[in-house]
Amino acid sequence: MKTQILGCCGRYIQGYGEIKNLKTYIDWMGENFLVIASKGRLRDLRDRIATALEGKHVTFFQFEKQITWEQIHHIEDLAKSTKASAILGVGGGKIADAAKVVAHDTGSHVVVVPTVSASDASTSATSLVYNEDGTIADVLCFPKSPDVVLADTEILINAPVRLFVAGMGDALSTYVGGVVCQDHYFDNHFGGVGTATALSVAKLSYDMLFRYGRQAKIAAEQKVLTDAFNIITEVNILMSGMGFENNGSASDHCFYFGTLALADREEYVYHGEGVAFSTCCQLIMQGASNEQLDQVYRFCRDVGLPITFEDMHLNNLTEEEYDIMAKAVLREPFIRHHPFPVTHEMVVGAYKTADAIGHIYHEGASLL
Ligand SMILES: [Zn+2]
Image (tube, rainbow, N blue to C red; front, side, top):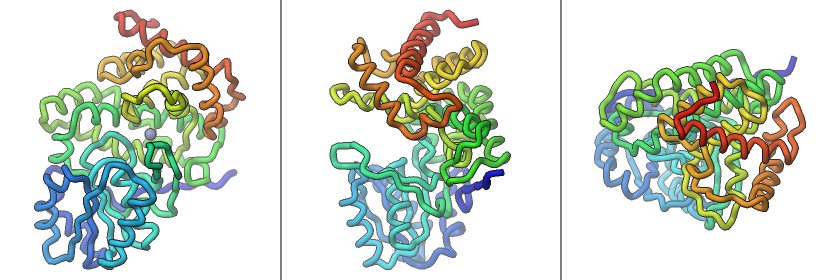
């Protein structure tokens, strides 16, 4: 029996207006805190954070767009000069990722306050570092997950709806990729195999999406808090993050990454949007039933996740472009997390079929 590993954030807090209680949760971390946030989030939340952490020495750093090594080294210098014992990332996935890198390099605690639930970066132990041109420079996996993740639903309900929906797209991939890894004893992201706990979290997140995703989107549009919005917030931030790391990934992200290899095409979709279409491709490649495809396609169509290349803003793809994408997919390490060897023809076949089925659903027809 292979060794099983489970990792998750130290403490997860979700509630309306909880940012005002921040000190209660992180008081034990020390006296000097460094807060990283974008210009917009500093404008919205700086005063609230300063008030919540009254009595502590708090330094604020305005994060500039891209998470590059240059910017990280700059933040690390600031963390050292202010003797920060905790790094607080307040914002989206890139801010969370930056906070995790800085905290790891400087031996500090890490706190994530997501202001959007567009991806599962908040709770994960992984960070992506980019080059100036937007290409990925490094993928880092830390020995420790964030110490505290505080999801304030008063902040999250005011986030853009499209980002909330993108988070559901990222979450959709979790069980689809994870169950393949569990069934075939492929490693999870911590180098062990998944636990039963991990699989049940992933399955629960999958079921919750279909049960509550549509009405959660309506609540997000109305900017009103409902049970469904609450549950999907937990799905997007906690269950999706725990689920993907602890079960492992298959080709659920690979087909999306393949589309990024088209250098001449501009990228219009968010990570979670591209991942939703990618998940459809994986399901088709592995021979999912009409019933499962119907459930996934209907859900994506209803909430506004891409199900065709047109939705991905990739119109009129040429055979040469399919070839470029397929080769890129085959270079992805997790494409080997299938119990069969994946070939070029299978990748192109999955892409084209996923797109064709998407058109069927856009026309109001179905596979059933
Ligand atoms: Zn993802």
